[in-house]
Image 1 (cartoon, one colour):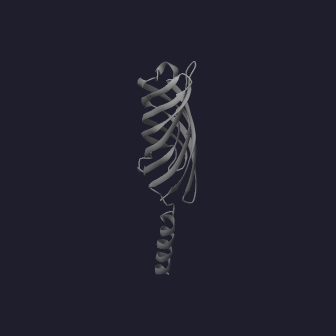
Image 2 (cartoon, helix red, strand yellow):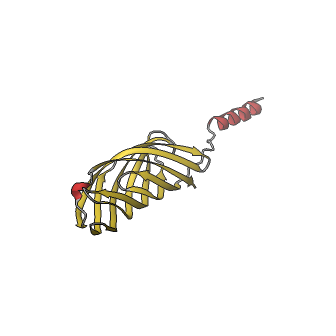
Image 3 (spheres, one colour):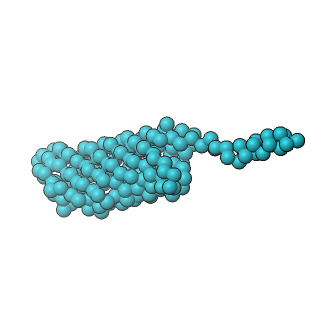
Length: 184
C-alpha cells in the first residue's frame, strides 16, 4: 500500500511539473511591405531572445528596396534606392506573438534620374532616423507569421545632392505595413 501511494504521488508530481510543448522559434524571415515615404518592399529578419524575467525582446533587421515620389512645384519624379533599418522589438506577453512595440535606426538613400520637359532631373535624397516607433500585432499560424503594424518616423535629412531640395520632403512621416514570414 505504501509503495502504491508513493508511485501515485510521484506520477501526480510529474504531471504537475510537466513542461508544455510550446515551441519557441528564435528566427523569423519575412517579406516586408511598407507604405511610407519612401515606400519599401524587402526582407526582414527577426531574432527572438526569451528572457526568464518576462522581458521578451527581439532584434530586427530590415533591408528594403525604396521608392519615393519627389513632387516640387513644376517637377514630379519617382526615384529608387535602398533602406536599411536595425531595431528592437518588445512583446507584451510571454510568447513571440501578440501585441508589441518597436523602434528602429534607419538609413535611406533614394536616387532620381529622369528627363523632364525642363531638362534632366538628377539628384539624391538621403536620411537618417533615430526615432521610428511602431506598434503591431503578430499572428502566428504554425510556422507562418502575419504581422500588421503602424507607426511614425522622424527623418533627419542629409542635404540633397543635385536637383533634390529637402524643403520639398517631410521630416515626419507615417509608417504602416505588413510582414508575412516563416519562423524557424
